[in-house]
Image (tube, rainbow, N blue to C red; front, side):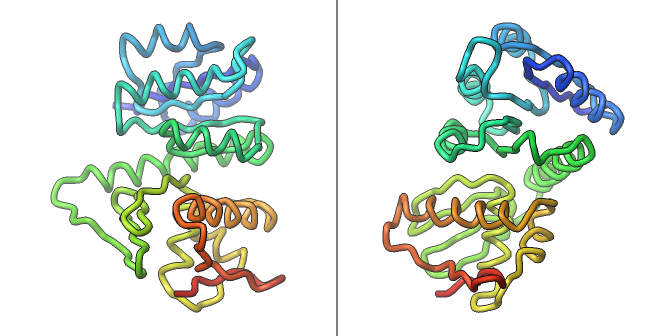
Length: 230
């Protein structure tokens, strides 16, 4: 049976393009133009994944409201924000509401979106497979659970997007080793600019500093990349 993906996007052309890109990969897609329409459908049956814009018609935070509605009904439902809003405040708000990932419209092509969706489903399938033991990476107060895609620092949970998680994993896996922008891009299974990688690393640092203001384990090497230092 095909996975069912719900797209909530108020731009008619974008909604159509996203749906067709995913349908070409064999997904069943339902598309909605606003929060009330989507919420009514979700009340009857949850999709296997939800892709939400934040601004929906006249609701500035319509996508956030939908995320809260969905997360109250399922802890495991993957929720991706696909938005033009690239403000860190919006990203942080999305993660705190329980979003699984946060993508920008200007860097998410119609070829890339299905790949990202497929990658996320593979991660979730691996996590739910019976008999799979937890695979954890521990570096001092840092613990990364690769199966659950969870991160704790000094036993405090920190929520990261998938891109941020795998960038962090690549850095912490081999402390002291320099990782270039290209290597981090490959580790995160993404295709973005060096500036986007730098922005992700900045957000990773900021999230650690929210729970530990003295955090300084990610070292920058100007023009070369980053390394994890214990």
